[in-house]
Amino acid sequence: MAYSEKVIDHYQNPKNVGTLDKGKKNVGTGLVGAPECGDVMRLQIEVDDASGVITDAKFKTFGCGSAIASSSLATEWLKGKTLDQAISIDNMDIVEELNLPPVKIHCSVLAEDAIKAAINDYREKNGLEKIEFEEKGVH
Amino acid sequence: MLKLPVYLDNNATTPMDPRVLEAMTPYFLEQFGNAASRNHPFGWQAEEAVDYAREQVAKLIGADPKEIIFTSGATESDNLAIKGVFDMYASKGNHIITATTEHKAVLDTCKHIEKSGGEVTYLPVQADGLIDLAELEAAIKPTTILIAIMYANNEIGVIQPVREISAIARKHGVLFFTDGVQAVGKIPVNVQADGIDLMAFTAHKMYGPKGVGALYVRRKNPRVKVTAQMDGGGHERGMRSGTLNVPGIVGFGKAAELAMQEMEADAARLSVLRDKLENALMSIEEAYVNGNRDHRLPHVTNISFKYVEGEGLLMGFNKNIALSSGSACTSASLEPSYVLKALGLGDDLAHSSLRFGLGRFTNEEQIDYTIEQVRNTVLKLREMSPLWEMYKEGIDLNTIEWAHH
Image (cartoon, rainbow over all chains, first blue to last red; front, side, top):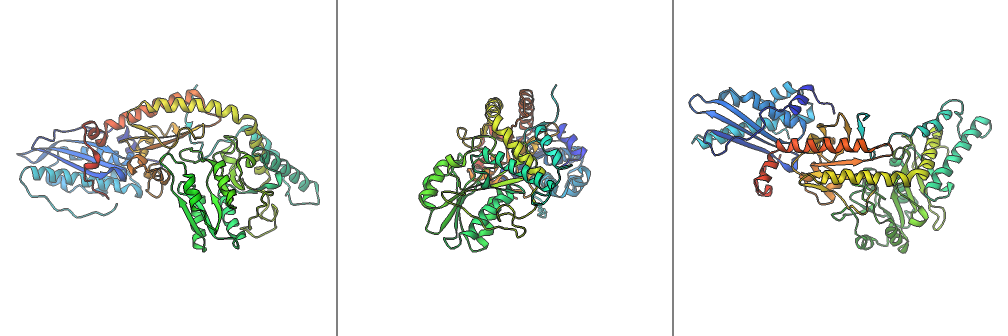
């Protein structure tokens, strides 16, 4: 299968690979996927409590090139967004931006799930209720 | 000078040897006759060429030329052997024994047999990929007509104990068919010494052309027959109708002759290169060879690099190195390799595997380049892998509740 140039670029030069301090109250971590399924994404956000703006985002991904690219792109998009804006990131935006073929759509869903999981982790740590998200069910 | 891309997917197909092409060319052009045309020189030439190739192919496996049935390839040969025996020996029984690590051309044919009223036992394999001979013998029943076990596996290169299998088959009066695709032309295969009754093999895995294969069908002790699966002009002693692919068959013959002459030297050279590759890659932390290392084709290795995903790994260098992976993402089914899973590998390790298949045209420079590229990519991807980080922190990944999707 041929990859789009954008996927190749993110794969070769991934943005924001790394780890944020989980111990910090303003860091939210989302860990989604499973090793048996061939992809696991961990996406972290650091939030400025006063403004609700995401000041930093990091990821680590076990998976194919499209999974790596999806999470790399997601961290790029998250930085500078408010939590409310971040919630509205849709997996199809990622599909479109990276030109993912149908068999790789699940990678974008995983990235969206990771964003939501990170936001909920942040909310939980800060005494806020978790948001119930609808299942995408593309897997 | 290193010429890119490097081809290390010789289990999928081999490049054609230029000497094979040279032998074939006249049979596309001036000597284009139909081998079944009995009344003019064009037909005679074609028939003579086919006869000669049949001898070359037979000689490679220690058979009589009359025992070689030319087909379109190994998939057809697998089908013809299994369905042909099932039909021909219906009065004797309907039970076939095979193994879970067989090629799809065997497994799916067996599934077809089950739908047609046959009974099939799928033997599991041990963790090293070998079948358990006691289990094989125990699976034989009065209705068993065929044992279908491959010679060497296409994904892990593991060589089954063919002589022991054939001895068991003979003892119980059961026919033994083997898919010899990966073994013939690579290691010595002799249908007499190995006790093989039927064997599928193909030209394009031994530096010959695609689209031509053979089925060996024993004629003596015992005389074996298969029911034709295609109706037509009764070619190939009535077992396989269809105008013979003369240039393909000539190429197959030439490839067999070259294999006879060069197999031993090729195998010796390639096993050194394979071991160099394997040892270098095994020095990476958490790398595992899949399958038995002692009973294995000399040019194959299959390695799992834990905590990195196979397709992601391939992407690091697949512009420059042609390899295949047991990862789900590289297959249409999104399921990881059933062969690796049959060895008892978890899905995670199956997803993390690479298959290296060296060949006649592989050289040391290519192996050195591959070692460097694979190693660098594994290390780079592990820096990106949350699983690697957890492993390094001493977290047992099995204790984590993963969101299965």
